[in-house]
Image 1 (cartoon, rainbow, N blue to C red):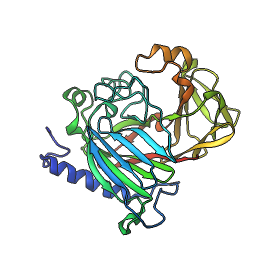
Image 2: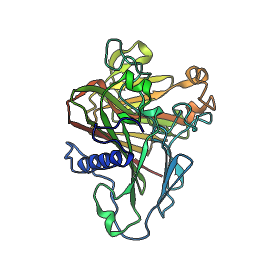
Image 3: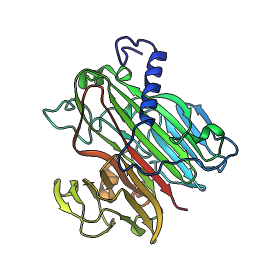
Length: 343
């Protein structure tokens, strides 16, 4: 590891200590409109956690599991009630050679192609978080802290990324001192993912963040997305023009690439055949992106397989992407999601 988060920290152990301190600060934050955290409800066998070949895998005695690549801290599998909830392309690269097509890639510090004449303008599309190797900081109790007494309902995995871990090119392109902690909490029927951003330098910076979640569904023609009614969105398929969704339910019948801004309801729900499939609750975030490439766009992407895979996935992505979030020196930002699975 090269330079560190702060000049006086010049060892891996010091970096880890700093990130753990950030985790502690994160758990003490009082977030507005905070949904109920995933937490255990009883006692019993402990969850199991192990790491292998650049990934961390956690499972509950119930059989529910989550798998996270250190490359990008990308969640590539989440199984609940014996069912896989995330879609990953059959052609996705899982060897660290390029960002993963599928799962939950982390977009930071810019969403999409960065604008010209901005501090992020020299960065690649979606920034560097999804194609940088993160550090596994270990497992811990859930946000409620109740796991200390034992239980089989929840386990939290923490991953860290700081400016010192970036490639030289990324450091030159975005030369700010920062620390990220990404917390992935696996619970019975639920998954919570939270990104904490801290400005460790002496000057402010602006950023965008998004959890680019690919959900697995059985048939896109039978899916509806609820909770976006009366919301203004930017339609990237229609030259980034603004529209307002009049229907409370969105059904996908072609390519969709929309940025929904300042959504009034905290939860966006995915139904299948009229039945609840997944509930996505934003925590500290007000925007969501809905994306499905449909036929032609899927054909044009080399790492999208099978080509008719668009029938079995839909992206509902929580984030802060309408404009920029400014973080002053020493300030901290946190946002993420809680997803509930319905069998």
